[in-house]
Image (cartoon, rainbow, N blue to C red; front, side):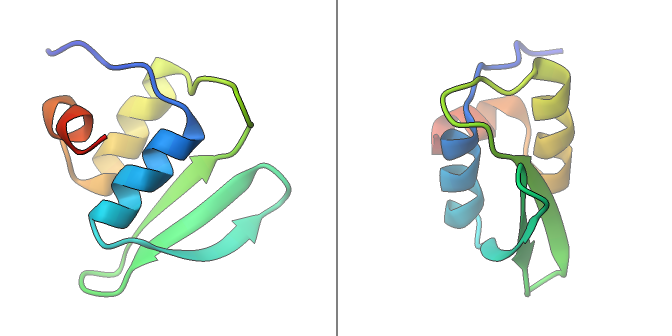
Length: 76
């Protein structure tokens, strides 16, 4: 298993947009939902300004995005 990079919500959102995800809605005050129309995938990003996303949470987000950690790091 490869090393999971540290990332903030801004980094995840930037990668999601590069992969074709668009903002759909805000879920509560701390989560944003992004969707991709092509394959109807969605990703939920925790939005806490300045804080890093926990590594296990980032692993789940990468699964939702459909990328591995190396591809995530390359896009970021």
